[in-house]
Length: 362
Ligand code: TXA
Ligand code: MG
Image 1: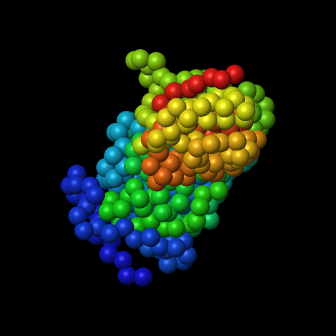
Image 2: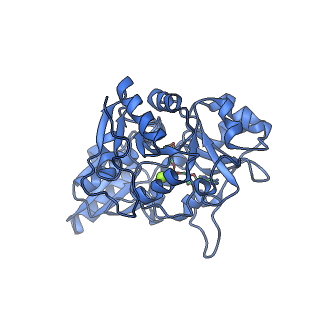
Image 3: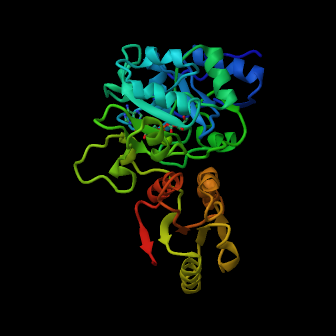
């Protein structure tokens, strides 16, 4: 495939670039090759991972990394995750790597777990937004792995959404946000996990989950043989003046255009509440509900999985938030997920989409 690796190189703060068409290629050999060439030339490429789509650049190239922040509209103080293909790359990225990192890698890599470690010199400070730590993960998606191997590079990649929007779980949704901002997105189908990786810090006195995901604190505790803490920022907003252990936690996130509120209660309580709200004033009102709720509802709704199926909820939550926008919802009453296990990851994302608005019915 002929590919002009200079088209789309950003030399000014202008974004999206006039005249730049974002191409979408399938994740076959040609797509992987095109992605690798662009990445080697210092450009940005949208890549599929098992969690969400990522906006990738050469993690060792400070100029390429700067373009990530520009294309996403990402605040400069929110650090990126470095993706690797092989465990042997870990020592290029991080230093003073504790034994626990290898134990977690053995159990959960490749897969949806990111580990925060002391940053090595080869990784520019801008990747970590100036922190002396670095977040690393080895994705399991075969197309992500192929691009990592073909390029031979560690890839810095945040989620492929515009800052503040829900993370994209398909090439279609990534294109919606990145059209005209990057030269290429490689299509690897719908993401299986659907929420971003678990972020665990090994730079705190005890291992601490900074962002919940498909790998739970309980699973990691079983591997390590002692408890893994949960950062309070997962379920609470940061207090005035508090610094975030994981800077991503302080920003408004995952928000559709509609105003979302979480509603806590069983299926009957939830249905009674949203139906009465629809009767009072149903204009622009939609429910974001579990499959079991749907037959009870008298207003338009989007389902995001079964009540007791957190993996299904995780896979659908970001798509559901984008679909609410597509349907023109202005107010969304979302049935609140559980707050344990994998559901904690779903709860954490929805709480932020709802800007911490919660109604308790029970
Ligand atoms: O599943 C994922 O992790 C996806 C895919 C593309 O791999 N990536 C992703 O990246 O979600 P991003 O940038 O959207 O989220 C990275 C999170 C942020 O909350 C950030 O604050 C945190 O990881 N993070 C990154 N480096 C960190 C560090 N050195 N210390 C603490 N938190 C860090
Ligand atoms: Mg993100």
